[in-house]
Image 1 (cartoon, rainbow, N blue to C red):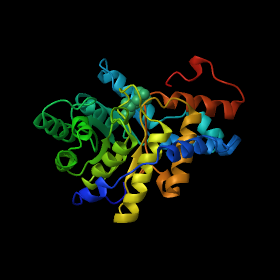
Image 2: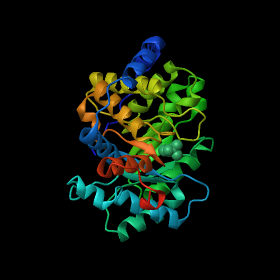
Image 3: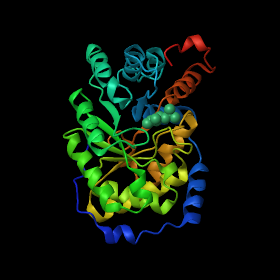
Image 4: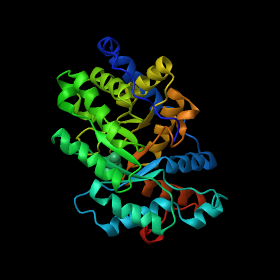
Length: 318
Ligand SMILES: O=C[C@H](O)COP(=O)(O)O
């Protein structure tokens, strides 16, 4: 991870002056989606880059130690070895960026990765994920518990009630407390953009989250009806850019929720490259939160290597 974004004072004047030009945002999002996509080996290289930025996620009520174990093994060896060998990439240590689970499954993930001799980070969602509608004390304890069980990254959800009612100082205070509870663990702050109503609210919530010391800002839980969209991402990455220009601190970005195809992963990488530059193309500053994206990326890499798409049994771990 890069040097952490420190907590700074809450600049309410900056927050109050925020205005977002919706038409300009929509236009830019369309331009990004229309960018030419790389083909052949260049596309394969982009896809491998995307793999290294994935927080491979399972957040389901029926998660068990065994499906978490399977997820961890997949994260440690995300692409079939023979496919990587054909691309001469088998010895480059390609893994996903992290695994992401519910707090109760952190200990299982830590155990599985340790047994596999993998140093992959375990990320835990917390703070009453996905709705965030539990008492603050409970939300703080949840963060502490996940850290104690070995999570080195915590994906907190913000209190949407505070954002929707314009209580930015109260939101800042809560996020600061989460940051403190995280200790050395990195904190990704989920805005749940599908529930924030306006782009202006998304920008303001991004700013407040960064001022309160978030290492990343993340779009969604994956459980809202609208999750990661390109227009909302433009708003958030521009907040990251403005924050960097004003404070000198780099904050990461994590789109999450509904990202399923290899082609989408390339668009996300393009968006980061175009809007924030090459430095934001690494897992230190960019993550893709996804539960099933890896399946399609591995399929496309299989196609690139063999010239045909695999049958189901040929990528059984996908
Ligand atoms: O944080 C990650 C998301 O919950 C994953 O959402 P997804 O299952 O739609 O990929």
